[in-house]
Length: 218
Ligand SMILES: *Cc1c(COP(=O)(O)O)cnc(C)c1O
Image 1: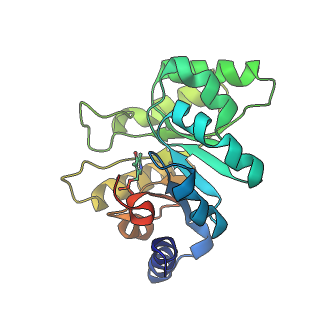
Image 2: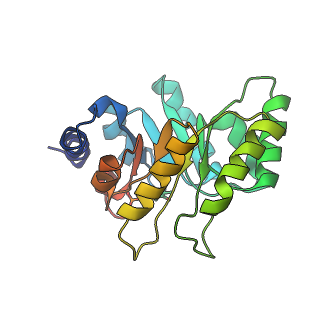
């Protein structure tokens, strides 16, 4: 089995162990820093959802591959600067890192300006570990932020995303995010990376973001 196939098998086993439908867990293959040569075998093996951290890197790398492989879905999983919102809205299918009011306003403006051409699905990043240096809305401010996105800016938010502190047991962070998602009637739960995606699936993840387990060390 290739590393990619191994990850797929592990996702399926984790979903089964949790009594969940494996189809309810989607793999985002995190391709940041890897070039087309490394990505092609995984695309040819059938993977269609990819995650990138940087707007410019993604916009340089993916258009030729999108020409060759229709139906690719690109997710922005890294922090988004307000001045790149226009490009991100036009380019990405899903943005996982909406985390502040100014960005919500700018994304809404760019969606309106695009006349419906760019309308990414949106997730709010939550700073479940309350780490000062990390992006994300604080847990106790998330419900209010969600309300602001919906009512003031008319944004349809699909779910929540988190990156637990590296030194912590991720399980309580995943449980917190799952609870917030349920409480707010949201559908998507983006959590789990190479080191902890099985734990995330047990807690209800609908998107796992896996890079190094598929492509190797960066
Ligand atoms: C890089 C990255 C990942 C993938 O990390 P791996 O440990 O390589 O699986 C997932 N999510 C985010 C937000 C990332 O920046």
